[in-house]
Length: 147
Ligand code: SF4
Image 1 (tube, rainbow, N blue to C red):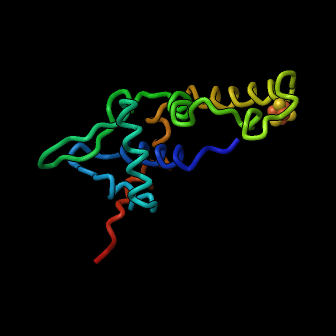
Image 2: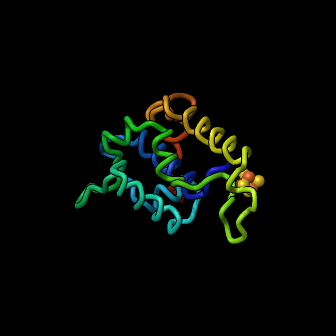
Image 3: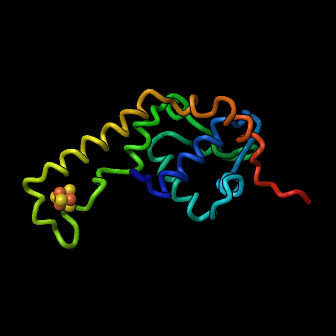
């Protein structure tokens, strides 16, 4: 199974923000630069994460993006399900619907495999994802280029 680029960007943003210190105020552009992706793409992922209650933007001086308590404790399986949506791994009902779709054992098996994929991510929290060795590497990814 392959995740969409959108989900991958959102997970990268969440991981970077999970290692932010309280006095670190990262903007969407800085998160995008740290992860070496276009800011416009990252902005869409950040907006979705805000709608899910995983991130919030602090306003004013010292403002910036911040992971919420829900974001820190969120199950990675839940987050990936929300980001990926309801889609199946194969487009049985697509533009040219498959003639087998009403009675296909493969479709059922693929649905089960998809659920097993998500279930393997359920026990992990976002905080688990940033323990060593990932966390220390993330801290160093500021995106601020040397002068
Ligand atoms: S063979 Fe089965 S799984 Fe494949 S597209 Fe057709 S209905 Fe879907």
